[in-house]
Length: 74
Image (cartoon, rainbow, N blue to C red; front, side, top):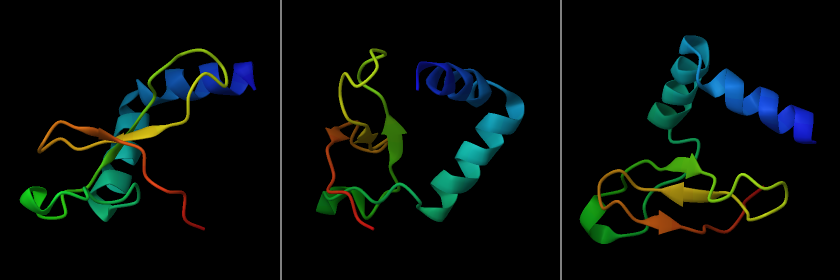
């Protein structure tokens, strides 16, 4: 798991990784902000720790600049 995490983090810093993240953001893959003021702004995933199994992934709203823990939906 550690190796996968390091490879994933490195990939996201590449041009292709950023383009893929932008596409997912524009589709709303990571959810929408729950605040009414933000008018359903799309969220970005954010890791609060670089320690393996340290914390779950949270979601960041670029409009209100708040970090949320959203329920996982399948």
